[in-house]
Length: 152
Image (cartoon, rainbow, N blue to C red; front, side):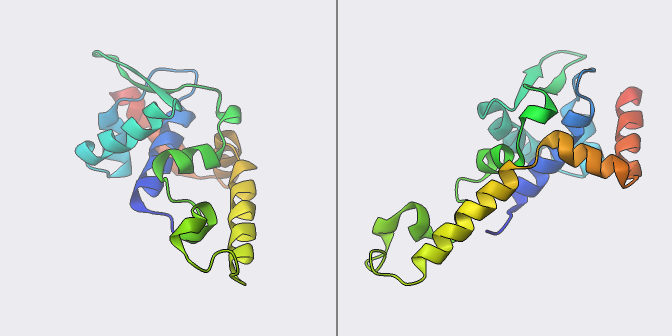
């Protein structure tokens, strides 16, 4: 599995939104500025997260994005699949018909097992876990994000 740009940017964006959970909505402009993601591309990324019902939006001067659920209830796998429909290591794992050899393929079972294990791994982590790990590691960027958002 290759983590594409949309997943990387989406995870950074939703982490910033998760860090503000329970407070004011996070404006797209704040996410764009602190994450250095173009506003236009960020809207597409956030749109995918909104369609997956991971974030909600509020319009207006004090508008922005909030998590749709508690960070403890959102797995990293949910975020990844919201942002990338191709999560299997090879195409034949999800679509055996794409390969004439899939029924007799010696390696397909390995790819299937690895894909399942990746899903189990990513499902076992939540946004809350990731935020806690970042805070424990003393990631000052979370504090900087909070300070920037207060200034908006």
